[in-house]
Image 1 (tube, helix red, strand yellow):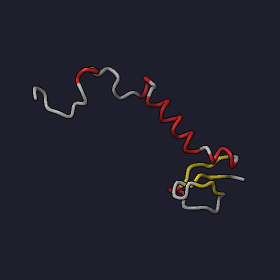
Image 2 (cartoon, one colour):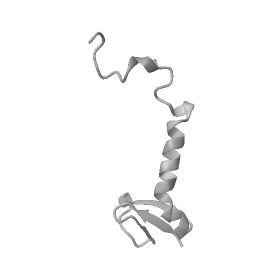
Image 3 (cartoon, helix red, strand yellow):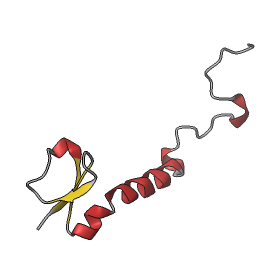
Length: 72
């Protein structure tokens, strides 16, 4: 059996659940599907700290966010 995590209802569903664009998965077990949001958070955290995917690498940390014009 295959399980999905529904982002709309925050529940675990089987194949006959909500539309695919509202779900994460598939997962092999109901337990894995129930941890879907935790897994997403863990992966996002890992990617945020991965130097290969860090968009800020090489920028000057003292330069601010870059939202204001220079000299203002």
